[in-house]
Image (cartoon, rainbow, N blue to C red; front, side, top):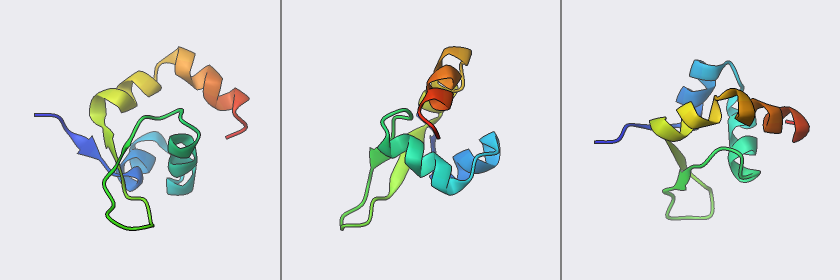
Length: 67
C-alpha cells in the first residue's frame, strides 16, 4: 500500500512552507493527486514522488523555477 502525504506533512519533512509545496505542485514540479470535490484543491503526494523530487537533479529545477 502506498503512503500519501499532505502538503503540510511534506512541508514539515522538507522545511518548505505549505504554500511553497502547493506552488511546486501547481508548477508541475511535484506530482500530486487532487482529491477535492469542490473548487478548492486538496492535494495528496505519494511518498515515492516526494523521494524522487528530493533527488539532486530535481532540486536544480526548483531553484530555476524561482520557487
